[in-house]
Image (tube, rainbow, N blue to C red):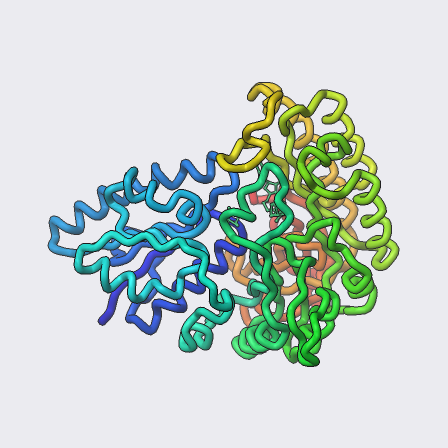
Length: 459
Ligand code: SAH
Ligand code: SF4
Ligand code: F3S
C-alpha cells in the first residue's frame, strides 16, 4: 500500500537521526516521505524536551494537527498522529490526556515497535510505549530497517553512543535518553561503509556524550573513542570525520592524539563548558573546573594548533551572581571561540536545579544572555574574518540558493558559498575565501578564480 509519512524533528542531531531511522523503518511498510503534513497519512512529531520552550512547541503543533486530522476525516481519510522523542519519553500518558488528536506516544528507545503500534492505532487504539527496553538498544531495529539506511547527501550523521550518566543538575537528557551505552565498533564501521557506498564523504559521529564512548572492538576489548576514529578513517571513500557532542571530562589522550594523527578528523571541537565560574560548575554537577577546561583546550591546541573550538553556555543558573557571570565572560575572552550557543537557564521538571533556591529573575537572565551573545558574535566574526584571502579545502555538498552556486563546508565547519558546476558535488575543492557574510564565507574555486562571486546576499 502507498502511504505518506511526514516526520518533523524538533531536537538535536540525535533527534534528526532518529527521524531518519523511523522513516527507514517505515519504508518497507509502504510509507514514503512527504515534506508537508497536509497530504500525510501518518505524522510523527519527534520532540525535544531540553528547554521549556522546546517542549511547549509540541502542544501548539498538536493543535494544528487536530485541524488537519479533522479535515482529512471529512474526506474519509484516516490520519494517524504519533509523538516521539524526548517529550514523549518524559510525559508519556500526559500527552494523550492533553492532546486528543494523538494516537501514538513512542519513547526514544521504542521506535522499532512502530509498525505494530500503527496497526493497532489504525483500528482506533491509543497507544503509549515509553518503557526502556532490556534488549540491546542498537540491535532492536529489524534487519530491513538497518539495511536501508539511505544516504541523504554528502554529509551524514551516525550514532556511536546514546544516553548519558553525567546528571548535570539542569539537564533532562539522562532521564529521557537513559543510561549511557556504546555501539560496537564494527556495527558503526558497517553503517559508515554503507553510507560511503551511497556517496557520503563526511560522517559526523553523534551521541549525547560521544567521547564517553567505550564500545566493543574487533578484538573483543572496549575501545576508546580515539581508537574508533582511527578505525573509521580506514573506510574507503570517507574523507572527513567529525563528532559531537563531547564532555570536557572525557577528553582522553586517545582522542587528543587522534586530532594530531588522523588526517580525516576535522580540526573542530564542540566542547560545552556551560559556565566559567567554579561555584556554578559545582552546582551544575559538571565535575570539571574552569581550570580543567582550560587545560583540556591547551592540550587539544597542542595536538592541533589550528583547532576551532565552540561551546555551549547557560546563563542564569540558580544562584548565579553578576561576579559568576563575569567569570563566564572572562573565560570566553581567554579561550577565543569560533562560535558558541548560549541559553537562558530553563527549569526542567524532575531535575535537581529546578528545585534550587535563588532562581535568577527572567530579566536578569535575558540581560546576561544578550551580553554573552554579543561577545560570542564578535568572536565568531573575528574568527571568520581571518579567513579572507586564505585558501581552504571545501567539501562541496549541495546546490546553493543562487543558480550556479554550490554550498560546502570548510574543515572548521564554516558554510562556504562558491560558483561551481553541480557535477562537482561531493568533491573536495581548493577555495580562496573572498569575503564573509553573517553566517557564511564566500569564495572562489582556485581552478576558476575568475568566476563571479556573489556578495553577501542576506545569507
Ligand atoms: N550532551 C550535551 C548537551 C546536550 S543539551 C553536553 O553534555 O554538552 C545542549 C545544550 O543545551 C547544553 O549544552 C546546555 O547548554 C543546554 N541546556 C541543557 N539543559 C538546559 C536547561 N535546562 N536550560 C537551558 N539550557 C540547557
Ligand atoms: Fe545533559 Fe550533562 Fe549529560 Fe550533557 S553531560 S547530556 S548536559 S547531563
Ligand atoms: Fe532535545 Fe532529547 Fe536531543 S531533549 S536536545 S531531543 S536528546
